[in-house]
Length: 398
Image (cartoon, rainbow, N blue to C red):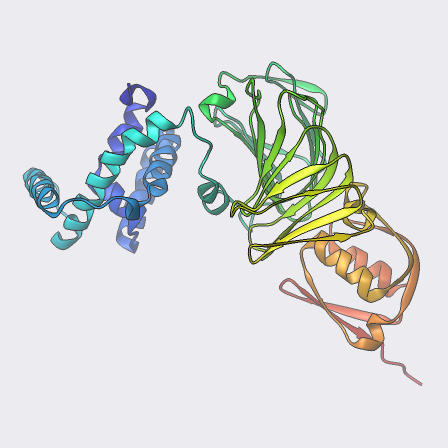
């Protein structure tokens, strides 16, 4: 039954000693070898990715092989390897490591496969193995069937309750053949400088900010509605008393029935937050601490500690409209908001921070365009160094 759930190519790879070595202890030699393999077998790249995910997701520390069994299995594997005609560039001692790892992986693989129908995805794996490449420029949608779509900025993506996909209201010839119980998820990647919106099968609307990855099913299960987020989203959740809606991040679980709220949970940040506009939500930090927040409240989790404050929700949701209305705010406050929006740092002197401004600031895709607007209204200049914007007063010339 387990083997039937894996393709023949995937099964072959997870039983391949060199493949296991490459996944768990990559070297330049192995990298070169398997990169060449991908070039020679382009039709099996999906199988490779699935096999690698299985190997990497196994926690080798949770199971220890009895030493006697380990030696026996190692000897058997070594004997098998010695019979193969092809030459090896890997030292013999590395095969001992591969043998031990192979035993653990094969022992735990049955549990991993049998449990996938009843278990949720490994959150650590989702938030560490799947990310946005620095070179990515376009919005990317990876479907359950592994088809990849590159989308324009601000593309609206919608799934019907039957799993039918529409992109900017145009029907796509794709229909899900999996369900949430099978843990097959779509992945939406929105790189820096891009935005997207998503309507799920239950009618829930999601606005996706830049630098965000969202994992979601085409069709929700009968008793559960769960998505996974690394980044920032704003949601308007369709009410369903029988199926609570859950947002899972690297540090917290957010549970709602029907409400609108903002989640800021970039995996590379030390803190995560939930800002509630209406309704109520329950937050669990997975360490036994739970709390409920009400409208105009923000709950923050940092260093496993939870805290709540009263906030102006607009300051945390303006990015949805891509317009920032400033009324009597200091430049320091403006820079703090822009820092969150563009995920950059601002450095400036105290006399620059104290300057007060009012008006409407259009949030262009490029933060440099926003800064040019500000330099046209204030006596400041700026320079960009990596992800830091350095701001100075303009020099006055006589």
